[in-house]
Amino acid sequence: MIVAENGVDFKRLEEEIFKNCCKQGCEALKNALEEYDRALAAGRDKTLYRNKGLKKTVIKTIMGETEYRRTIYERKNEDGTKSFVYLLDEAMGIEGSGFMSGLLAEQIVRASCEGAYRSAARAVSEMTGQRISHTAAWKVVQDIGRRVDVREQEAAALAAKEEGKGELETKVLFEEQDGIWLKMQGKSRKKHGPSHEMKVAIAYDGAVKTGKKRYKLTNKVACANFEPAGQFKKRKEGVIADTYNTDEIEIRLVNGDGAPWIKTSAADDAAHFNLDAFHRNQAITKAAPDADSRKTMIDLLYSNDIDNLLTYIDALANSVGDETQEKNLRGLHTYFTGNKDGLIDYRRRGLDIPKPPEGKEYRGMGAMESNIFTIIGNRMKGGRACWSEDGGNNLARLLCLKTTQKLSETLRNLTDVVLPEKYAEEIITGLSATKVAKSVGKGYNGTHQAHSPATPDYKWLRSFGALLPLGEF
Image 1: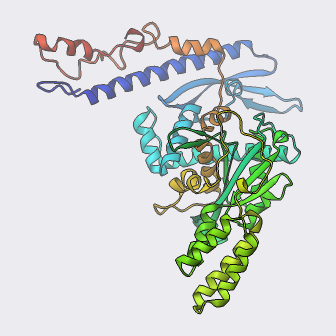
Image 2 (image 1 turned 60 degrees about the vertical axis):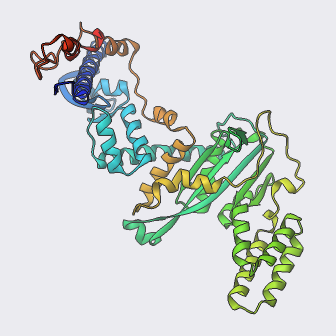
């Protein structure tokens, strides 16, 4: 600690207190785990498990690495063979040495969702008692991402059998989908080329007003993946059925830019395709040769006169003399013909749409442009970022959970380790003066590192400098 003429280096003091707290926490955790191991040893079936001594292992937590010893046993199997097990590991549901706690994994995942793996590793290392590398951060994301994939595959299988576990009920479900092109690397670059389209889908049951001109989508779910259209549709249906009771959905409104893989989602009898207004109007603006023709197209569109709109575009393409303008108009005609059923906004089609619940609104669709940036683009596009197919998929799954505020719950379910209540209490009480030495190291009490001025004005500093265990604050 550095003491200046008129003050104290508070940052250094804060760091020392933090380190002291982390060391005491690790010691308390070590004591509780070893006592739990002794309790398991005393209560085991001694005819089945033969004590073969103690082995060291490490559990990585936000406080730092906690090294402890647990008993290894020789077990007699039913077929007469022998194997070696750790009853403590089995009881806690962990495998091998170097297990990472769920809380630390969550901190790494959240930091990795915000920025590059190097930045994530640096942020976690600075804000916790644990030091990790960017490679460790990457491995955590890959491991958790693969576990989420297993859950999504299971949900997709249940949805295919109409056995989804979703309980949220709604009569109207809004779905929006789009793709984003990301740069590829390694074997994935050889397989797909320099860039590959990641498919992204969201679903929600309406919107609530949060400000004068601001709205928030309600009960939003999301998924993203590089996989082919058929597999992605199954994944999307699984994610929806895992939250929503699909038996109660009377009408589905599917919004997109008209890509074939998106329109397959509107093949259901209860689904209605809606061509995204941004892409629709952008296509008119790019193809119209002048302002008057653009206005005419817009007027015909909003008059629901689609047949005359297509006739007008075709006649205009035949009359212009510029070859480029003709090509653009014929492309617009083809685009609108292929998406004729979705050109009119769903609110102007006369559909029998149930009324929204009180406090909720059914607004125009078109949230995907914002969501595709918020969910995927902001983290995965730009900044010279390149992805392998698996690496991109794993991170994208976590980004979807983060955006829909399901990340913490999912991580708790995937990394849950439960201790008996007795030992959880001992970890807490282990942070008292009766369980932990008053200082870390020999004779250290916080004042041996620096000297406080002996004047009355600095009496508070001499008291503050003596670092006490947590239980004595």
